[in-house]
Image (cartoon, rainbow, N blue to C red; front, side):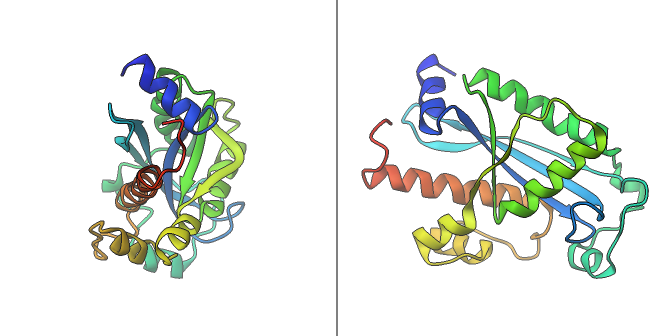
Length: 209
């Protein structure tokens, strides 16, 4: 990647590197319920200044000791937390597996840190922060409370706040049968975010680029 493109993405988001994240969990309470899957997609700019997906990294996560697992949540996601074929990692290992390449990308693109992009990111960032606190991880690349919300952006750009409907309105293929997999949802959310940002530029926004 050229120095020019590093400068562009750093300037475009005030020194932050947008990283799209989705988590699958054993419930809605980040403090008590298990983190079961996490996926992250880094973004880059091409030579024309258009944002696009770059690397996808993901991990299945073992429920932390004493974690709550809600039956309805597991039925919704279809996850069997104790299936040995998940090859799940302990939370501390899972976080480092996700964080290490993101830290490298932050440095490579001349940014100061990552900012989480998610569809209703309060949920994803809450579970991420809770896992960071439980494991004592001191190297999280993410801003601890700031985020970009594709539900809000989808509502603004397309009048749709549901991920599948916003993707459809944006012309992004969405397979409901694959939804609620952390990797699939993260990549579709990344496509939606990039489409909105690129379209905004085409309409005359952000003359910096």
